[in-house]
Image (cartoon, rainbow, N blue to C red):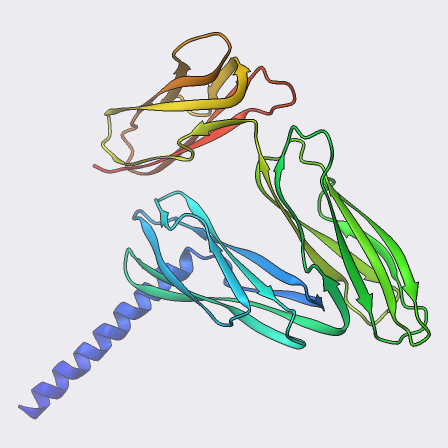
Length: 334
């Protein structure tokens, strides 16, 4: 009897371990990046990184919760329910104001569909004690693309390392949408240097959440470049809803119909509607200029089962307004 009991106990343990390993395996497969090192940063910087969750499974993935590894870390999650063929983002932000030296942090992501799993997303940096930044990030906030003036943000950068003739030699951004200027505000006899950094943003042709980075290079040959995070949310003068369009589970050969609404604060005409796939079509209900247009969308479901996605571009006659892009997702089930 004792041998039978030990056998079943061992079998239960092995089954549990195997099930846990499978859960961990699928969870890690949908998170292509699980660790990021931001390098050397100025004290006061807000170090941020966006992890992607890409659902390549044939089942829905759901984010149930998350736990941060430090009180200095904030987490922003996009969609918490991710259908097959779609993705979402998990952004981690470390506030370095109260720390020096190497700082590890991040979060533990808790998933409960298609089965329970926990995955660590790690974010780290090295915080310089001789360099401080205030505020710690270039955040342009909510920006209207049609705005005539380019929004600007100023930051104070202070060096207290005592190195003679220390200075910033050049700056670099990832995109041409952000420009930056640097002005030296003063130097003291003990090697302290103060700079004023002014960043400008051109929101033309940008829609939604925007990210960039300003990298500072110094004349210290032994020091790494200093990154400064840049962000903005650009509002379009035209919107479409619902967006994205998630159709859920659909049957092969059926026809799914949905109604879309295209809105603006001023009357406009819909110039064209184009789909990148023949089985997804859309047309306006009425012509002429109006602040709200109704668009009828029709999806003839293909016979091939599995994840499906397509996009529709809606162009208007509004000046300097790029076409809207609507992404459609579905799961074709037999």
